[in-house]
Structures are given as C-alpha cells and as structure tokens.
Length: 131
Image 1 (cartoon, helix red, strand yellow):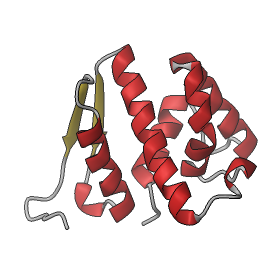
Image 2 (cartoon, helix red, strand yellow):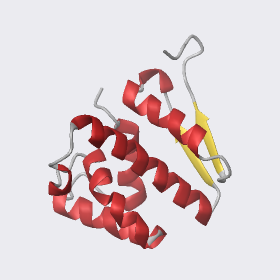
Image 3 (spheres, helix red, strand yellow):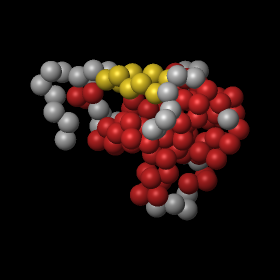
Image 4 (cartoon, helix red, strand yellow):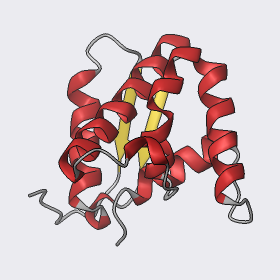
C-alpha cells in the first residue's frame, strides 16, 4: 500500500510514462502533458512530480503538511483543467484497497469540481464501508 498509488498510475498512464523511464524523463513527460492541457498548470508540476515519486527541489522549503495540501490542490487543479477541455471520467477500481490519502483525494475531487464535466466511477467489494 503505497500512498497515492491510484494517482501515480493515472498520471503515468495519461502522460505516457513507462516503468523504464528515468525520473528526469518522467518529469519531462509530465511537464509536456501539463503544457498540452494548459501552460498555467506548470505551477503545479513539482507537486505532481512528487506524486509519481520524483523528488524536486522546489518543495524543499515546505513542511510535509504544506506539501500534502499543495499536492491535493495540484491534483484538483489538474482535474478542473481536464474537465474544461472535455468530459472526464475518473475510474477507480477496488476502492476497498485504497490508502487514506488517496481516498481523501477522491473526496476532494468530487466536492471541488462543481460545474466540471467529471464522472467518478468506483468499484469495491459489497461489504466495503469507507472510514
């Protein structure tokens, strides 16, 4: 159970990042994806690189709580931007396995995007009860 695993996978898939890519290549591909969506999203690039496990210097002066808060905000900003481009579907399978931080991020996405064209689909075991 590594934190943010569903988001890591989503960012890697959407940006065309393979497991063979170096950290530098992964961040470059993520930057290219953000620029295609909206150049303004480059402001959140360091936090999304952190989401995929790449350490960047821009976050060194922040507390862990600030990094967490800004990372949540970065993902939310990305989803808002995506919904302005096209209807967006977020599919999360096996919600019963999700870590607490990722679950919080799903909840944030669901509440922050009021007018966006976002559909969130989740699957889970019948007996699953969220915390």
